[in-house]
Amino acid sequence: MTALILKRLGIGLVTVLAVSLIIFFGTKILPGDAAQIRLGQSATPENVAAFRARLGLDQPYIVQYLTWLKNFMQGDLGTSLASDVPITDLIADRYKNTVFVSALTAAIGVPISLALGIMAAMYPGTVYDRVLTLVSVSLVAAPEFFTATLLVLLFVFVLGIGNAIVVGSTEGKGLFELIAHFALPITTLCFVIASQLIRMSRAAVLNVMSSPYIEMAILKGVPRKRIIFRHALLNAIGPIVNVVALNLAYLVTGVIVVEVYFGYNGLATLIVQGVQTRDYILIQGLGMIFCLTYVVLMLIADIAAYASNARLRHPK
Image (cartoon, helix red, strand yellow):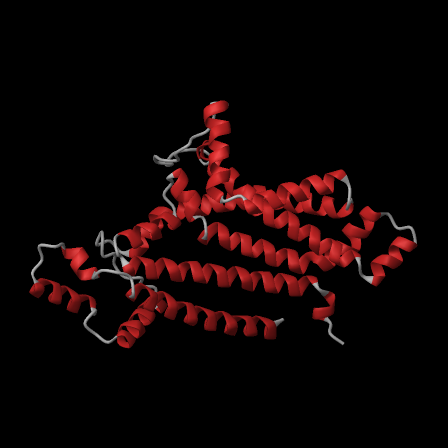
C-alpha cells in the first residue's frame, strides 16, 4: 500500500508540473497585454513599463515561471490584475457555492446512478435494461445547456417552481432553502453524471459476471442477486470508483456551462471572468487548483481500488 501511494504521488507531482507548464505558457499566448489592459488605453508607455516591471513581466519567461511556481508552492496565488484583490480572497467567496452544489449533486446523483446501473446488470436484456440504456445514452449525447433548458422550461415555465437564474446571497439560508435555491443546477448536474455512472457501473458488473467463478456459481443455482452483491460487485468496485472520482472532479472543475447558464457564482464562472478580463494570474491560480483537485481525487480512487481488490493486496 505504501509503495502504491508513493508511486501515485510521484505520478501526481509529474502531472502537476506538466499542467503548470501548460497553464503558465498557455496564458502567455492570450491576446493583448495584461499591463495595458489593467492600466487602460490612456496609460503612458512609461506607466505600462513600470507596471510590467512591478509584476515581473519584464523578466524572461523561465524566470517568471519559476517565481510563480515557488510562490504557488508557498500558498501565494498572487493578486488579481482586474480587481487588485488577493486570489485566495476571490476564491473563498466562490468556493462555498461550488462545493455545496458539487457535494449535494454527488450525494444525490452518485448513489441513485450506481443503484440504477447495478439493477440494469441484474436484469440484462429486459425492458428495464433497454429503456435505461436508451435514456443514459441520450443523456450522454445531450449537451448540458440543452438539458438545463428543458428543465427550466418544464419546472419554471410549465410547473412554476424553481429559479431559472440562481442569483442573490445564500447567507442565513437553511439546508432546504439552499437545496431549493440550487435545485435546477443540481438536477442538471445529476443528469450529466448519471449518464456516465449508469453505463459504466452496468458494464463493470456485467464484465465481472462473465468470469469463470461467476459462471460456476450460476451453475450451482446461486440466486443472481446474491451473486452480484456478494461476489461480482466486490470485484467491480475498482472501475466504478475510478468513474466516480472522474465525475467528482468534473463537478468541481468542469461545470462552466452550468454555472454560466444559471448565473450562480462559482469557481468555474470566475475563470471565465479571468479570461474575459485577461487576468492571467487568476487563470493560473484556478487552473492549478483544478489540477490538484483532479490529482487528489484520482489518488483516492486508486487507493480505494487497491484496497477493494484482494488480488492486488495479496499478489502471488
